[in-house]
Image 1 (tube, rainbow, N blue to C red):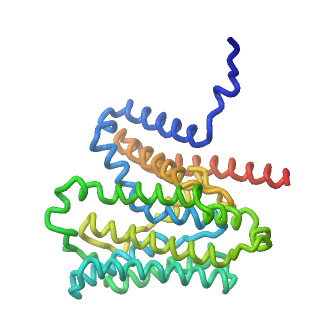
Image 2 (cartoon, rainbow, N blue to C red; image 1 turned 90 degrees about the horizontal axis):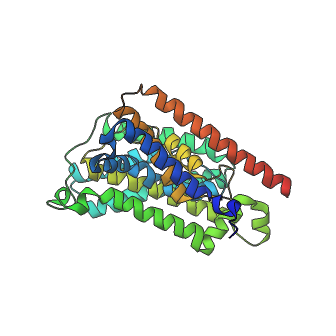
Image 3 (cartoon, one colour; image 1 turned 90 degrees about the vertical axis):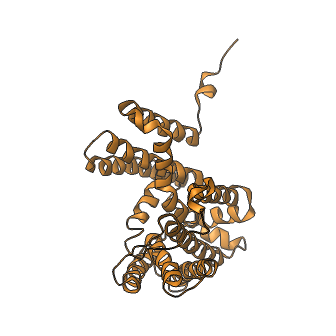
Length: 319
């Protein structure tokens, strides 16, 4: 019997990334077996849940050809808002949550309007929004943390649902994001807008409406992440979300989302963030100098970006 080695050894990019993450985890677990226990694995996943929740719709936005660098600052502002409303103003939690999502949606809407109608590059516009949200978060909190936020209900943290709440929400959002990108017409529209905006407009697609919707969705995702962080820790700080934008971009690039638009993967974002968290936790457990984490992450991002640029060049040459 003849075996086609070429077809049997061909693996999809997704499978290759899964194998790579597994190998890296196995190496660190071999150096420190405690890393492979249940508590450590849960801690690794919990460590990426909040930035992951804030980044799911960012994947869709980047697939459409735009950026949002303000997700971390939006999360900080969105965590402090319900913290103040509930602990100092007497609002109930559901109302505070709705207001929080409104804050995130407003930030996203402003970003979208400035980018789409103000013709300001999204990278620049959302950096400006990052500073605005950070300043507002510092102002309303007076530069202090806000604690004593109540549980969603009595005994919430003692239940399995309460312990895994943010992780469950992250998993749900991954499924929703993947479904939108790969199983809906809107996902096809997003990819079309990111691949060739002019061709999309010629085909009758309202690219501005698509991008504005995704800016608002990204703002809401960041707001939800901030709120869930508040629920998890029962406190909020104006420093929440610092560096999330860089982690998100690194995670989605490693995961296979193209920074040039037209191709995105939410499950890839999860794998990218997971890889970075495994490296970080593994280095801490193995007592390796922390600065190596940044070096290794940077190298992985550069390699992933180089592959992305090569794919972009091949695609351009082919057309």
